[in-house]
Length: 248
Image (cartoon, rainbow, N blue to C red; front, side):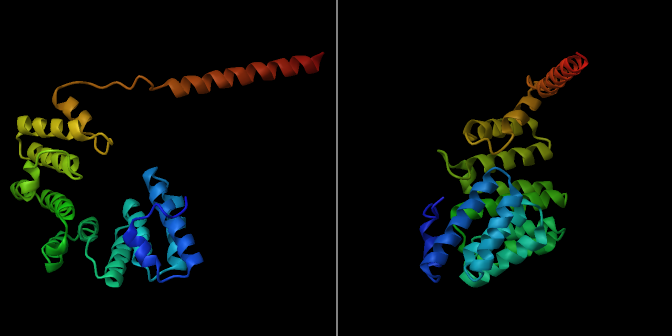
């Protein structure tokens, strides 16, 4: 990890630091992203906290620490870091995650208020789609199923071609349709999500199989236990041989 893997905008933020410190912080930020990819929250948190200690007024470091907290389900801490990052950068691009944090804290009304704030109008298309997915989830939590469905019926839902949001939006819409009892329509949208989910970011294929009445069997289930048993038997045999040698 050289640190050069970071987005240009982050490198621009790091220009306020000395060259040596900027390079070090960049490497820590790259490691945060890499470790989050493999769900190593302990390692990611250690690198994020180090980055904040070295450059706490750089928005990217606070975002990184906020993302780790978010992935760990530490909603209050994540929200605090995202707010700090927004204050330092003036950007509201983390707004969808901030709204989701409010949802996680059990404050749906505050979450919806934040989702409809003037800052929401500054979001990119991709960020607005993510916000719509969060809003739909909040409406579902509140038992407002029709509102949850309507929140996702946005122009991007009908867009052709694979976009960054295609899989997640189709999956969220399928779940909402299933919740309102439109099972056949839900099946169609789970199929769309599965077709575009090349990165396996959802369980759309499994959900589709469930609707079709297919029972998936893990062929490797129990294999690890069998291997452990073989190891124990081998160790037992070795032990017996050693004792026999000792007897001689």
